[in-house]
Amino acid sequence: MSMQEDGIDNKVVPRARPKIVFGESLTKQAFKDQVDINKIVAKYQKTGMVNHLNQREPFYGDVSDIRTYQESLDVVNKAEELFMGMTADVRAKFHNDPAEMVEFLADEKNSDEAVKLGLKTKREPEVGEEQPIKNVAKKGSKKGSEASEEGNEGGSQ
Image 1 (cartoon, rainbow, N blue to C red):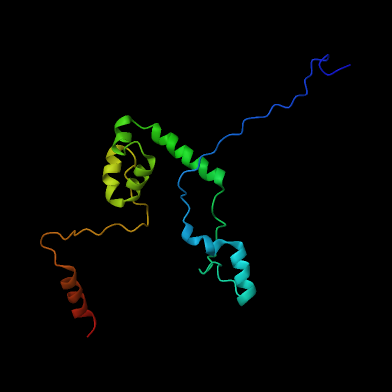
Image 2 (tube, rainbow, N blue to C red):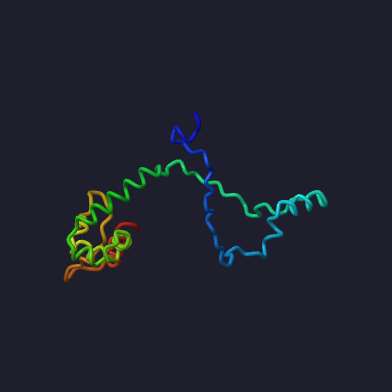
């Protein structure tokens, strides 16, 4: 039985190779000698020194409280979902960019405007929290320094 009787033809058909055209290289050729492994090894054999290593001080930081990538992504997606649920005029104020709104809300100078836009609620001071001191001197009352001087006159003779 020949191969052609089975309908199978074992001829090898050469494939056309794709032609790759390269343009001008974007790689900086000025560093080619510094990164050539043959030149690095030759320099090491000659001098015994390797000087192409990182010269910067290492950075060590506590990253134990950083969220995972998925948790961070969930926070960003939830923030974007909440932002897109706002009215169109509020979103337009921030050029439809949630990051721009976050930056706006982070600045305390924008607190009153944020309340007007409905982005924040007016915060009432809690019990025990320091409140701004207002000048509450009444007409006819003596100023604080005068009153304290009078209190000291009669008590410590």
